[in-house]
Amino acid sequence: LRALRFMSDLRVMALMISHSTQSLFWLFCILMALLYITAIILTQGATDYRFPFDARRPDDEEDINRYFGSLFTTMYSLFMSFTGGVNWGEIATKMEKVGFMYFVVFLAFIFFTLFSVLNIVTGVF
Image 1 (tube, rainbow, N blue to C red):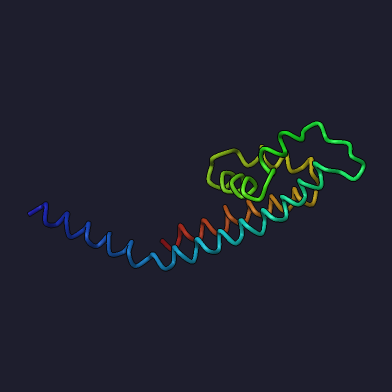
Image 2: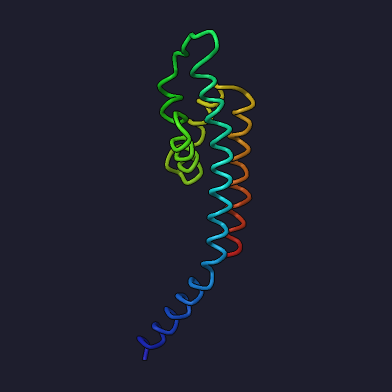
């Protein structure tokens, strides 16, 4: 009798998950768009920093290249920063060397994803 009650609870949970897939899909689309737009801005800033007009390369080029070397690596770094894969303060310190405006863009991204998007998702689901 207990096993049947457990199975009905499991069935209800599976139905709830299947009904929330549409909302999860749109959440994924919003997060990917936010990641992509922010990554374009930060990659452009890092590229301008790594290859200045006066041809003098910065000393920390390897660190900047590791986190912001291409669009994909920048998106990956942003994803790691808001999911806990890497401390976002470490990446923010690197971005601060690139320029204050890019530092603010990164902080705005972290603020928006952590405090707005993910908290709303937690509240809805």
